[in-house]
Length: 484
Image (cartoon, rainbow, N blue to C red):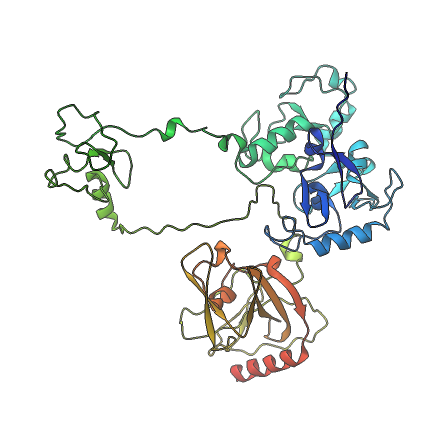
């Protein structure tokens, strides 16, 4: 009898090996390979000191290669509390000791896949009152079965027993719930009471829930019956001698069937049964049934529709690991409001990360709100230069207006500069922003609109910060002159 060995990979981050399929994928996440790196996806998410500085199209699902390599180098100095080997990247939230993801699972540590993605060693598990009660039940596992696989749960441990915080009606194995979560994605609900809160609650119990469609939604021919064609003429007077259900499927034939353009549930032999076109030799384009025409006219809807196609990066496993926004060092304002006058220019305000710089008191005609935004400036300051060029996006027809002097293109990315201010319009620094040209966020937007928008640019788009004193002084002078 020939033995069959599982193929294994070694993670570049934790230096541990695991299988490329089977339950190891449930425990350590999918294998991610980029450039010279092959890593567990959960090592990226759970590494305590590894930031996610990119978006879903940068590096490996937002983790930049330079950050990953820096963490790999730093981890060589950290020793695992369980195996005493180096390259430990996961730190316990409570005791601050480090361990490998493989050692963590062997020693029943807890990994949380939400918020700050905290981890806890076996001695520091954060138990609530309900879990503490379960720990005190000595024979609980003898008569408890998994609701999914119907097998015994064995001895209770909060790492291996997943329960529903919403109803507390039963238990499932960790691996059983992980399989269900990977399959359900967005549609994960409590398997007992159907509560939607269950999806977020299990993330705190160590379950990774991807932000993607359910697998059953993506199965080939899953909705074949729904795609079957409608084959009946619904006109008040059908003139077909063979009846309403007779259809010719070759376009141009007398009894060719056309469906209503708007509802798709009303058919007509085109053109023979359409009033006014009975003798026409050409079919009626954009056929609409009487009911849809009545509704369209009452709502004043336009018959013109725009179709756009966006090629988006596959983000089925992407999860944002960014820290709490209120703690971010230089987060772009999300509530900025600017003049609608197309002839005026504006300044872009970015909250300060430099607390040592002296702040200047705002003048009476400048009102700073709690977010540090500045309103009521009578003459906004010109930020952009007048020389412009046009660049077409790859996935939409609208053109994006770009400033030649303030931007550059780098392998499909647009790079341009923005400025950081204090609440009193004291310029602190210049930041470089890098965004993907064909990103759907910027469809039909000018560079000026991108810079001044409420939510187009975010913290993940900033790649560099420069304290160029000459630029800062020049900008301060411009602002001072505008406020006089």
